[in-house]
Amino acid sequence: MKNISVLGSTGSIGRQTLEVAEKNPDKIKIKTLVANTSDEVLEEQINKFEPDFAVLTDEAAALRLKKRYHGKTEILTGDEGLLAAATYDKVDTVLASMVGYAGLRPTLAAINCGKNIALANKETLVAAGQIVMDAVKKNNVTLLPVDSEHSAIFQSLQGGKTNEISRIILTASGGPFRGKTRSELETVTLEQCLNHPNWSMGKKITVDSSTLANKGLEVIEAHWLFAMPYDKIEVVVHPQSLIHSMVEFSDGAVIAQLGTPDMRLPIQYAFSYPDRYDHSFSTLDFTKMSQMTFEEPDLEAFPALRIAIEVGEAGGVLPCVFNAANEECVYAFLDGKIKYLDIAKFVEITVDKYENITNPNIEHIELADSQARKFVKELIAKN
Image (cartoon, rainbow, N blue to C red; front, side):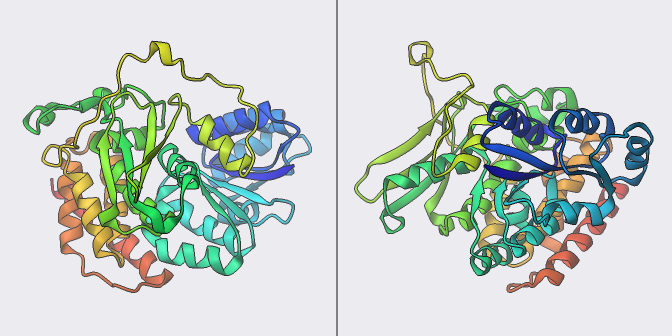
């Protein structure tokens, strides 16, 4: 039985995690739930799973819930409650699915308390990859990927040895604007941006998918997860989203992991590994698969991928700066404050202006995050 803390339970990954838990009640027990402001959704989850305690990091939302809810689950709030959930002594595995940089601190706290991590928050490794992976090693815990692409790589790697890898091939759907030129992207609307052709995700990650920034974050994440140099990590656009990623070995063999575009599959594997639970979701029907196509990503139309790879290769605090600037720009786009093409434009300006620190500690990372956010907010305000 896995005893789980779900950090980000009301988001897309969190909700699908609870679906997996509901399908496997004899294997997964939900011990704590953490959300930000969605008190009504959290209340429904509390009533269904009856965790030991639940957390709303937003104090106003927590007060609303406390006024309504009078069951046995304790309601905590703020950063103190978040860290309590991440380090709870009755939990062995923490699902880290909070959106963005906010997931770094609780994930590190969980690792340092000896918790195994199912990682859906790629920004944690993007911002502080060396620090996080050093902590994983020091505390002798496992960190398993929940992202479909990294789960696919993890599964494919079991077909060979690390020293036999020629390259890792990350697949990308291409998002809703695949094939569009840069000039055609000048008039992109938010509604168009959020209309992803294959996946159902939260707004932030859906925008990131459309700009290919998300794929850039995944390249950096793959570098840290699999100790793989950047020149051995490639991105290929695969519009059908059936092959989730591939590994090519030294003898030329390529092992790929296929499946329906359903996040519940990699979520479940992160909990079941090294075993596999019986599936309860849709599976591929190969007789209905008319084609699988592959293309090079267009780095001129979607420069965020190029910028992410460049900061990954540079290392230091620049990946954190990239992530912070991208988060702020995406939220500004969602709020109608900037145009679609401004996202990558302002991110690149921010990265270029920042003086790198090549061997950062956690204080350097936190400073880079705050300074980058301040800089890009001022840049947006001047726009």
